[in-house]
Amino acid sequence: MIYNFSAGPAVLPKDVLKKAQTELTDFNNSGMSVMEMSHRSNIYLHIHEEAKTLLKELMAIPDSYDVLFLQGGASLQFTMVPLNLNTHESIGFIDTGIWSQKAIQEAKRLNRDISIIASSQEQNYQTIPTEFHLPDRKLDYIHLTTNNTIEGTAFKTIPSFKDTRLVADMSSNILSNNYQVTDFDLIYAGAQKNMGPAGVTVVILKKDLLKKNPTLPPMLSYEAQAKSDSLYNTPPTFSIYMMSLVLKWLKELGGVEKMLQYNQEKAEILYNYLDNSNLFSSLVNDSSRSLMNVPFTTGNQELDAEFITLATRKGLLNLKGYRTVGGMRASLYNAMPKDGVIALVELLQSFEKERGN
Ligand code: PMP
Image (tube, rainbow, N blue to C red):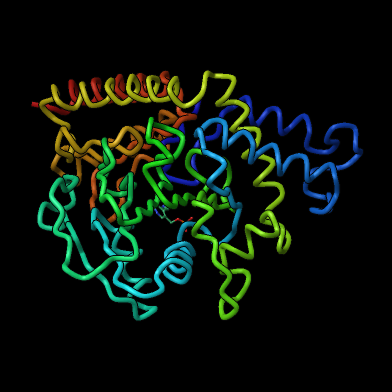
């Protein structure tokens, strides 16, 4: 038995993979694979629309928002968001880690005016800021990263900035919690953690943000992408199909609220163990802990490496921490079963018994 704790691309629900397997060479009696279909065919368009409808339903996305399926990963959104939304003023950033920093870097590359309204850099990114310093000048929008995949922190509640638009990189915790779409003006997320395989990036945005801009290449324009229903060019059809299967799976499980409960139970098992262990400890402040990514360490690089080797041998895979953080990181995305977390804690316990003092 293998458990995959990868930070992304990440574990997918086994039932989804099996379903895709049964449909791989012959989808819905078409005689062909989804991979072989024209993106303009009715049979594919049905998949496309179904994925959109399911996402709208699961996230309670109102009709005043559009849903786009784009390519280029969340990384391209670091560029597309400022290109489309930052027309006159400054951009506010909440800096909570490496992925926020990347978003900042890309806005700077476009010569945008940047205001860092809060940062937890001095706390080694082990907390989520709760105080924000808004500049005197106007902001086009504020950007935050709801879940920090590398540092293992997450916003429990979303700050409100009244009249200023809010943009979120939700790549690593979309569909895992009870965030309200209406608290945001734009949300983006790569699929490869909670929604499916890599290749498709979801953008959810308020329709009033869709402005025609003839100087923007259509591939980089939300308005052009929305107008063509994300079919301006060939979309990543198979990734969108896989996403529709994951969304169906989530709906059958009871939706996002149910998933949140399950994720809380899973994370609690691991954090409880870490908080009571004499060998391993969590790196993150209690109030800022992510349910999705849990970095932890013994504080001793050699012991950490020894644990990772043992875990790999036991089928608990991809537990090595990100290089700037070190130690271990267990990613507990939606598709990670509770049994995986229990197996991890049992191995931590037996390692502690043997190697701890
Ligand atoms: N933002 C966050 C929070 C991420 O975790 C990642 C990927 N690990 C990215 C952005 C970049 O995503 P992509 O690889 O899809 O460009």
